[in-house]
Length: 298
DNA sequence: CTCGGCCTGCTC
DNA sequence: GAGCAGGCCGAG
Image 1 (cartoon, rainbow, N blue to C red):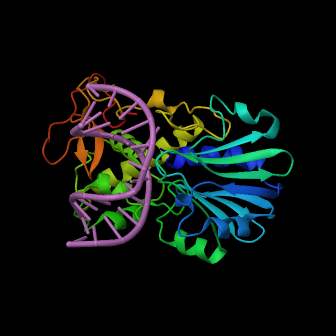
Image 2 (image 1 turned 135 degrees about the horizontal axis):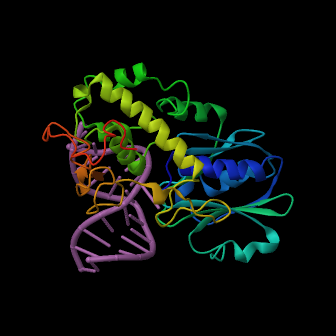
């Protein structure tokens, strides 16, 4: 589920609620999300510690503790819910905990934090600062930071034979983009998803760089995209789904040129795009324009 | 680099 | 019942 905008939304909510609270007690109900750490080790390391800050890098969340951090990755269906003890059974429509709630943290000040993950692709475990550093080191630049430059992006794409879609999903190229925002960025930049990295022009790379940043910022402003499973820690939905231009819109007319939005598979992922607005190697035809906003489908 | 696997639940 | 889903990792 959650890509950078959703994880950032979660971070912002949690950073209002968690810092300063102590993990008074905790329960682990399923071993898989903790692996390779054991349930006992996780509980031992986290119990009694105070939460200092909540940070994000790419799609990873960190609850920084006095010693080390709780590393959280939400995978496809992971969720974090924070609820006051009194309201416990009424955290949204869910009655928590349920059979998909794998970790529960009982915090000081009468708050409970739940980690829930239906498909169990997500992770939560305690890491040292050193382990955290190693993990983060393998990630490419944060797209919304000044470390993400057109020049650096260009260098990461040259000589690459794979599709730009695969490269955008590669967290070492740029960190935090997932399937939704890859498709939306490519549409807004007017670049076909199948285009090989090495064949992109500087103009295309530059447009993509801008589109990525614009889309992510706009999605954060709208608190992320809720297609089905994504809710923030207060059980609120995101609002960006209404602003998606191609993702999930296969068969609908393109909002720019009325060509039907197509869905196929690129980089082993469902890929949504407008063949007219995103001319590629196979279709050199440009978009059939309704108005004159050629360079700016967004 | 591409593919299958990891999981459950929902839609066709 | 098959196929698909917002992610990632390891095998070949």
